[in-house]
Length: 181
Image 1 (cartoon, rainbow, N blue to C red):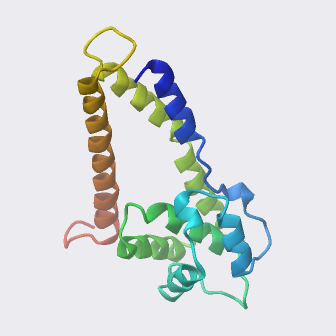
Image 2: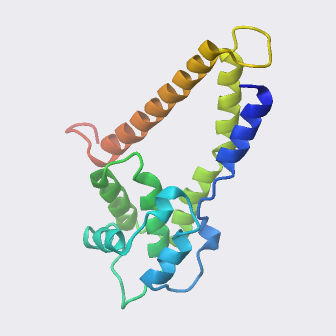
Image 3: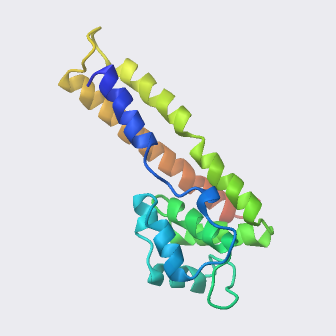
């Protein structure tokens, strides 16, 4: 893999479309409108179904509905759930969303949280570049198969470490052991 291929890979990954908070209208939406909106997002967002939304509502991961429409805040809560579920358990997500609701963290704070996550793309690109440089055993532009294997392993280990950090942070924040609060 060459430097140019790494750059292309980073552009491809960074260009993946996530639904952004500013794309969510200020008005309340019916479930079908939400599903249409989410169909333009990432794989996790596109996978959202009516049943999932109903289950999240029943599990009190969203603020209670008023009528048949979902408020902008509830749509932001759905977006947060979609982004978290690839790493956290539903129990951890439920505790997190309920804690945000108890803190009266509303629409603006949810937007800040979701937008902050999007700002990580530059750090990701720098990390990939660092590991690409570190994996090269020779000065040639292209990675040999063993260098590629080392790079892939580094990405896998980083992914696992980040997932563990997310889960342990959720556990310690929302399920602290006695004396840890």
